[in-house]
Length: 310
Length: 310
Image 1 (tube, chains in turn yellow, purple):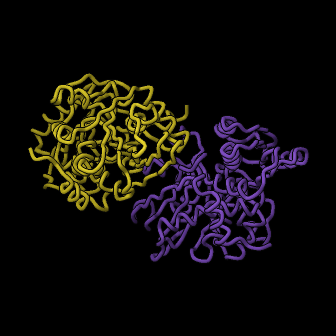
Image 2 (cartoon, chains in turn yellow, red; image 1 turned 45 degrees about the horizontal axis):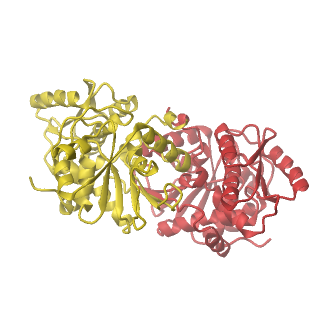
Image 3 (cartoon, rainbow over the protein chains, first blue to last red; image 1 turned 90 degrees about the vertical axis):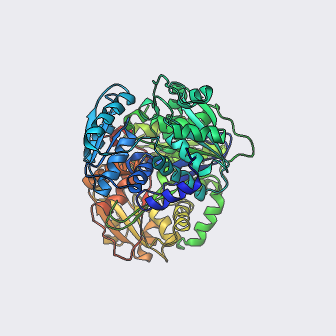
C-alpha cells in the first residue's frame, strides 16, 4: 500500500475548495490555557460541526457516484458530514448508525435529507448492516476513516492550519479510527511533531502500536460517540508506524475538565471527543518543551449545549 | 468635546496589547448566512466572553488607580470585564448591578474576586448606588460606555478586524449605550460604512437620532441584559451624529432566530445581544448591495448554553 503524502492532500485541498470553511485559529498566551502558548484550531465551526466534511467531499468528488447514491456507517459526525456533502452535491444518501448515537446527531441527519437506519449498540454492528445493504443497492461506500480519499480530505485541515501559523512545531490531535491523524501525518508528518491523543477507554492507536498491527479494543467512555471506533484503520496505522507517531491517552475526567475549561474560558463549545486533544495538555499528559509552539485541534462541537453549563 | 478618532484607538491598541485576545474571523460564502458573503468577528471568544475587556484594560491603564481600586455599575458583561482587568492588574474591584442580571454573570463576577452589589431592577438604579459608594471610597469609576478611554478601547476591536480582512466595506454592530459603536466610529468611521443594530425594545440610538440628543427610553426584551442601557452615551452620540451613522432595529423574534442559526449552523454560542447584529442581516432589516463585503460582529457569548439547544 502506497503511503498517503502531502501531494495527495494538496490535490484534495484543490478538489474541496469552496465546499468547506476555512476555520479560524485562536492563539492564547503562555500561562493561559497551559504553561506554553497554545494555538487552537476551531474546526468545530466547520459545516456540520466537525472536520468530517473535508473527507466526505473529497471522497464524493474523487469518483463517479452511482444512481443509488452514497452509503455509510457512522457513530454520528461522519454520517452527518456525508449527508451534508451528498445534499450539497445532489446525490442520495443512506446512513447506518448505532442506537447509542446522540439524539442531536440523528435529528440533524434527518434534517439533511438522509435515510437513517439505527442498528446495533456499537459502530461495528452498524457497519456490518451497511455492508449488507450496499451489496443490494450498489451505492458508493464512504468509509469513516479507512479510505484514501477520506484520509487525504481530513489532511487538508492541517495544511490549512500551517498556512495560518507557520511557526507551529507540534500538533495535538484526537484519534478514533485514525482518519484524522492519518490526514495529519500525510500532510505534515515530515515537518512537524504530531501527538495523537485518545481516550484511555478507546485506545485503538495505543493498542495497535503495542501489537504492531490494528487490533480490536473494548470501547466505552465519554467520547465514545465520536472517538469510539473499535479498531484503527490500516491507512492510519501504516502512517503512524512510518512516521513514529507519539501516542498519549487521557481519562474521561480529564476530557470533561478540558471541555468545561474551553467553554468557561473561551466560549468554545467542544464535544468530549473535540476536547480530548486539549485534555492532553491541560492534564499535563503531554508537556511541551520550551522551544515548542503547540497547536491543539478542536475537532468537533456536536454536543448538547446544556452539558456545557455545569 | 473633542471627537475620538483613529489615533486614540491606535494608542489604546498599544496600551492593551497582550492583555486581550486577537479574536478570529470566520468567513462564510454568499448564500450561506445571507445572500452576500459574511465575515463574522468572533469576539465572544474574548476573555470573559465579550468585547468589554478592551475598554476596561484601556481605562485602567490610562490613569493611576487609587488604593480603593476601581468601581463600576453594569448589567453584566462590563462588570465582568472590569473585574477581570482588575484581577489581572492586581487592584481591588467593586461591581454594582441590577437584580435582573443573568445568574451566570453574577457567579462569574464573584469567581473573579469582585465585591458584588445587586441593587435595583435596571441598570440606572445600580448606577446611582455605585455613584454614592464612589463618593465614599474615592475609587476610580469605570463607566460602561461613556468614558473616552473605554470607547477608545472598544475601538481596538475594529482596527484589528480591518487588519484581518482589509476588503471589508460594511460592519454591522450591536448598540446598547454606544461604547462599542462609538469605538467603531472612532476607528473606522472615515473609511467604512457602519450599521448600528439595536433591539426594537431598547432603541437608545434610534431615539437619540430622532430627538437629536440622547434621551431616556423604555428598555425591555430578550437582549436587555447586555444592550439595555436606558440612554445613549454622549460620546457615542456625538460620533454617531458626526459620521451620519445608519441605524437599524430588530425584533426579539429575529434576534432569537439569529442566535439559534449561529449555534445550529456554525456552533457559535452568542448571547441575544451578541446575535443582534446578525439578526439585521438574517431578517433582511439590512440588505447589503452587490458591492458590499459585510462584517458581522458577534460581541458576546455569555448566555446559559442550554438556551441554544432548542
